[in-house]
Figure (spheres, rainbow, N blue to C red):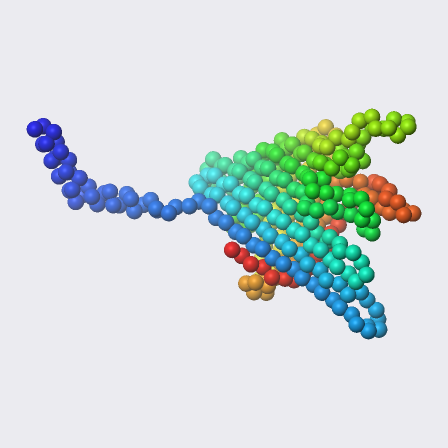
Length: 317
């Protein structure tokens, strides 16, 4: 009897208009399909071609292509941000009377997690992981007998923690990490034995017999600074800047590894885009190779410079 009275009371209470309106108003404030993820996928192909026939001034016919892709996934909720970016590049060139050559080859992945104490602040406590390598063998042309780089030879891994200043309204951020571990992988034993990309090279006795194999990895501990900025300086014209500075605490502290990319994108329409860019690298551990008297000779570290100009089609999905 008591249970029946209690059940009747509950039915009357929950059917009361005031209570039912309260339930509706609270449920309306919670979206059913809430997602805190945003994504961006861009694939593109740059192409150039030139042909000659009975051309009095001379010249070699050639064709070039560059396949590229940029993919990002970003999670933003309250005081937390988690950004993931993956980028790939692969370009080839075929010139009349010459073998097929690689013009660009890169794969990179970046994951950055940040947390800020106050919603209005632009400063984050941040942790960052990055990985970079290439897809296929690289050569010091015209020598194509022995590659000077391969898949995972080298590969670079950065893992660290620090702070980040992020301005979404200005499309700009700065990251500083006083605690960063850099690992260089050279998983090709021949290149490791040569001491390529800064790993410890093999040791041979006076008769040339192998005493110890070269190391396939090298670990450093230092500080890292990254900056990024993208700005539309004219209608449909964008300037992009990426800079990375790293210095090892233990080995020659103050000697800075530099990786700097500058680019300008011109958006013609939804699918056509032109771009020009410069990529500069200086790493004291990377020794340049030159061909002298028909032989590959290792010389000191030098500034690496790559310049690219292209026009092609892009597709966002």
